[in-house]
Length: 242
Figure 1 (tube, rainbow, N blue to C red):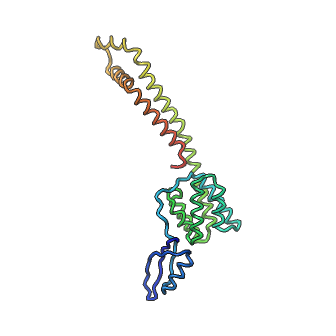
Figure 2: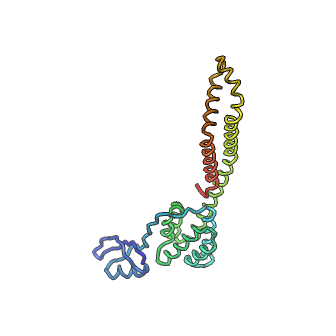
């Protein structure tokens, strides 16, 4: 059975807080009344979640927009969550929505249920939801959150697009420079040796030769480092959200 957090007033006027286990919120209210306590607030206690799924903003925007449409059409919130959880193509979001539906059936608020998944739902979304539930404009709040996620996703896409070309040029330039140092510069080693014996080899050229030799001697580690940088850059560009 779920655990409820409550705030209640005693007959003498004092206020107490605590937790209790009950099958439903109504049962928790009846239990408090049986103890001569006047309930002020009773909410389902948020479960401790070790790991919360991260969901792409485009999936969140679609889910919140669908919830708003369903509620405006007269569908109950619990039923709306069930429908959206079945329609979404994001497994993590479907699981969260299914859990949220169950918690709402036990008497929790939508904001309280979503707050158990901080990686999926940012604090600003929870605040807007809480205000919408308290003020009676939940549908409008859901649509505002959907628009917020849409704007954030569009901004992220533009940013990734703006960074992709400079990143490509940087990686290509680095590969060309390394290739020249490893394969091209050694071909002039005899010439550089003659200049070095005559004392006519510039300091920068000597440094260049040292770097080239070091890269050739550690070519395996250089290759592994480049592969790591390429993989990290690709994951950074493809990540769902910042």
